[in-house]
Amino acid sequence: MKKFFVILLAAMVAATGGLLVYGAILGPAETYVPMKDGLLEAPPADIYRAGKTPYEVSSLLVNNATPNQIADAIINVGYNALQVKRYYFICRVDSLAGNKYFCSDYYRMLQEGQDFFYQALAYAAGFNSGNRRACIGSDRLDVTTTSVSYDRATKTFDAVFGEPDKREGEGKPYNYYPDRAEVLFNLPIAVSDASGQVVDYSVMENCAFTVTAPNNSTAPYYTLELNLNADSVNANSETLRVLSETTSDGKMKNIRVSELKFVFTIWPCGVFRSIDVTSAFSTTISGKSANATLTRAYQFSYTPSACSIINQIQNVGWEKYCNQSFLNAIAEREASWTAAK
Image 1 (tube, rainbow, N blue to C red):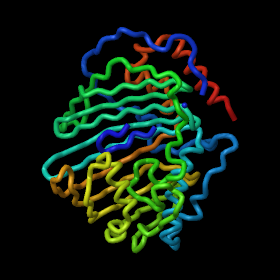
Image 2 (cartoon, helix red, strand yellow):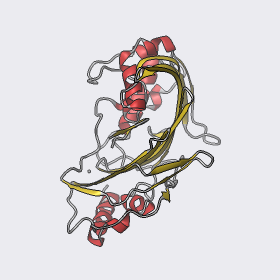
Image 3 (cartoon, rainbow, N blue to C red):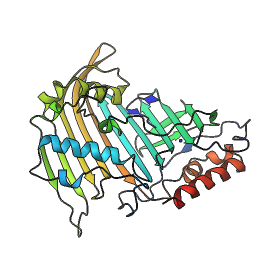
Image 4 (cartoon, rainbow, N blue to C red):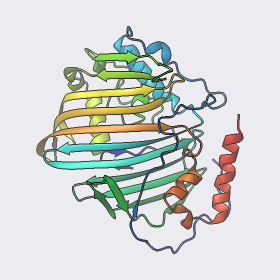
């Protein structure tokens, strides 16, 4: 599930009837453009699922907060993503290691804490890959490909995915990091041990941060700028491990961070609007030393049109592999989510 600079994280009713139309052949490469419905737009007032209470955020996002409170705010926003009815985000990752350029585009949506869809495309100095998955109830559709090309001038990917595999009974509710909300979106910051049970705020020591409160006329959201202290990061083995896991599938060793900055924009209801991460470090990969820079840029949407598995399947052309009974079952399931209060 891990592909280059991302960990692709990724639902209860089994779809009725035959799931796929088999025997499809690979078609020509297609340029994939993520859906952009509702990106950076304010979420609806009823964003949270029935019976779910959001974790506190606003009282922690103040300029006289302690570093630990700022860390708690980030964690709580991460947990809130598992309390909402739906969300969708796109993420762009760019990295330069030595003289080699790497990048990845990925996006993911979650519906009622259950069903999800994601796609990732990675360019890595000629060894390119793609991964796409949907979990709907107890069924999973999954496909990978190495037929991926990238145009650096237009910053677009082309790929041939072909027919997905059907995996019955392998759909899973989305909650892979119940105790590690700070890494829910692959954020390279850890305030606990690997188990998530022992709190450790040491990575926040000597950090610098500013909080800008919402301004309804210009920017109706919080802006949190956080600059971690390099010595504190380098002394925090769990943050270095998370950085390696989320950028290289754990292959980076001997990491020494010189810069690790975050800019979060957060809606007053306690969910992310955007995240920008900038990091610079030296490392060793496969015995070779290199200096590297890496950026991640996330944008979030909470609009039903983007947070629809049917719409996502149609956006990437997967409906030609699915029979109508399966598509009808998804539509009914999505309608039940929308009607639920």
